[in-house]
Length: 507
Ligand code: SF4
Ligand code: SF4
Image 1: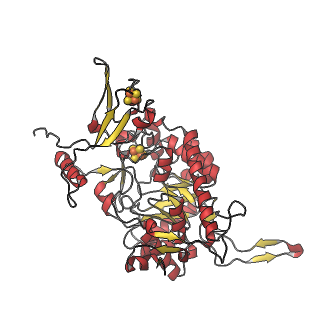
Image 2 (image 1 turned 45 degrees about the vertical axis):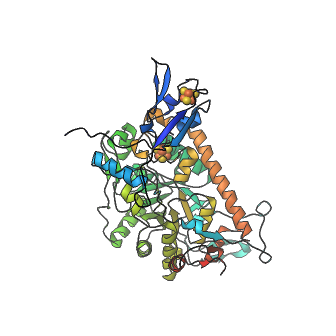
Image 3 (image 1 turned 90 degrees about the horizontal axis):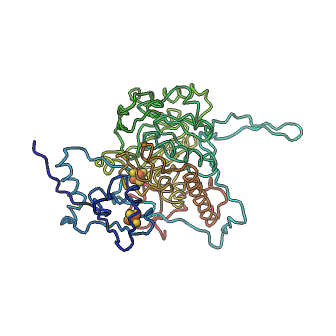
């Protein structure tokens, strides 16, 4: 077959300011996509625009700030229906005959409901609280809650708890780090996440690739994931975390399995996943032993049995059309925590068509799950964690008001470490040293620096959460959970208001 010439135009163009460039070649070294090349014959730095993904690595590291990356002004003649992206995708597929892969979360203009929800604040009555002067409690416990507790009152005034409480996770802030597997990201990233979680008093999730022994010291702050591929799952692994999460689905690719390409499966990753070096790590779409709630219940109990009933078990699902009914089943399968991952949830690699078109916004899924569990009188039998595009402390507060107990952050954590959402995680050449297992590129993440950035983010958001709570006159985050009276909506239709259970602004 004849070689097909590409008709694709570069998406971005590089401008190098000649009067500033001192030919230090830092951009040549820093670009993992080989955009910048040095021509020794002409003593010149050249750009190959067609490889540029606008990751901004060269821009940040250029010592003289000589580089500008711009959107290519030579766009296709797009229109409302045939956008630049649609035309580009068709051309790409006509040239390769392949499924288009992408990384990170859905970037389509589906409504972000967080931005249509506004929070309340105290005025005159129920006065606001100043968080700098008065304590505001944001500590959160995740796990089954007892409807009531029996207390033994002893002579002399001592008391003891008679009711046996289910195992709980204790978080100093209602934010956890979302699952990212060793393989999708490298060990330096896991080190940074684990350390930040331990030092701030929250949790990091292993993802489906197992846990490196050097991280065992953080066990009290680790959530162990069990996914359909069962990579790295054995009794030792299960007991190295504070909780276990069964991953049924994820928001970026509901209904399909995972694929870690063989080139990313280096020695240590292969060892942990218990597969040969260089082989593709394929997680099947379904768990081959789960076809019903009864099957799920068996796995929940098998994991509890393997860990002596000392750890909460979470079940993670993608937010889809019937999430509320599924969540109800998950509670009846004796899970302690439900994780709902919305359509904006991120991934290292997913077919673009799935990422952008399958699933529902997390705000709607959360509201309907919380309502269903309340209506059935089983809300306290489970905690809810939501994930999928949480971008700020305001999103966290709104999620809790809609019924969540806590949130996972994934993309926000990566952005804190350097990620610029270039969406090329699936190439394994992450310029910021995150979504790569290449030993040289991985060195770009210094676990000390990255964990400090993560802790700063947690601290900043936690302080903002306290400010918002104080403004609402609340001194404990527990008072906000599912308290939709603290929310008002702007510009939503009646059906959306009904699902969210929120009044329109002004009502
Ligand atoms: S990093 Fe900046 S100064 Fe150095 S060669 Fe590249 S463009 Fe020139
Ligand atoms: S993790 Fe790396 S490759 Fe993925 S979007 Fe962020 S910067 Fe790009």
